[in-house]
Image (tube, rainbow, N blue to C red):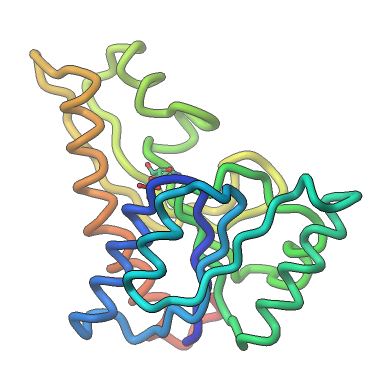
Length: 191
Ligand code: GRF
């Protein structure tokens, strides 16, 4: 399957997918990296990996629809079959949702429905929960609300700091996301 990864920041999850593909652990081809932040480190990662990137800023468009139409055209040109959100800090709008219905997935650093939205790791840390984790889910029009595909728990230890928790969560993400994407790409189910 041909996939596009959307990122806004560091792109470590994008990197994990690139690495999995290189190691033949992902029967998917990452044909495009879409980024809405011109200075994001994810762009450098894409360059290094030889993955074409589309750097596109919503500010340059009159509306979200126009912005997404432009992205959609590029996705179509590259034959993208599945959209993989990896730290893309924007709600997906009507245009992409209807074109890719049931074919957009996201990774979120908490056990949804707990701690949806921004800074989920910080939210969980402040709430002093004993267990948090990572969720991969289908994307709908809400914020971190679509049907859950996979979850993995991460324990909050007694002397956990925000930073150590963050490191543990990212480690889990980097293993879980390629595994789940591989599963979605290798089964016949509608992804
Ligand atoms: C990850 O924690 C992901 O769960 C969340 O945004 C973060 C992105 O990190 N949606 P990175 O850009 O992949 O390093």
